[in-house]
Length: 321
Image (cartoon, rainbow, N blue to C red):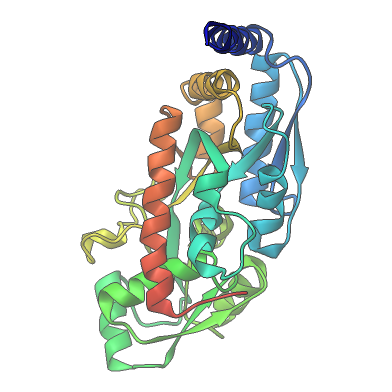
């Protein structure tokens, strides 16, 4: 019995020593950051801004690797199955919370299998309409929808995306009867919106912004709780529809079981970067508001968003295999 107790104490000491070694030495080789989308989009640009800054702070290269497909699930699954050694990260995004209820047959449970590391930013979507639609604000849009049930076509960048479900949340909270028209990405949806083939889109702010500024689209509202600094004269939807919020949120996750020392190091460096005026300015160009905090704070955001969108998915009837 004494020998067994000695072995337990020895094992615990070895574990503690390993943790201390990781804390002192980590990272000692490049870190791979999986982005589950193609290059060039808002998510990819965000990761590359942060990867460059993290590389400078960590003294090791943070390599962005794009693994698109499966509605975000291919890249996420790759991280779930990666070694839990602190050298593989995931760009966590709204699809991770949405897909938990949207997909019937996922091979993983995101909340169970990915450890939250650090929040980065929230970005609003923007409710944009074709200029030919005779409405100037959200109240007029709701009145128009109710006077013309089923005649308003709501575009999205694809079924189950945050763009789609932002619109579904609006429908459920206002009683607006709109026909969902999914596209294969925001580009073709914006083209048809500007041409008047569809009437409304709850788009990611960065992709709609230049068309708003050029007058090709009319912004009625943003989906955040407060106006966005890049569109200070555009009110939030919640000013007309109390309680409405549908922001995109981004952060870092690692495989469950990753040493806490590695998680704490990445979390600390991300929080320092989010306080850096130069980094904050670059994130602001994407419409991003920093969400610093502990891994536990980011974990609460993930849990709350997953629960919120589960109700919207159920209300919309959307489902994918």
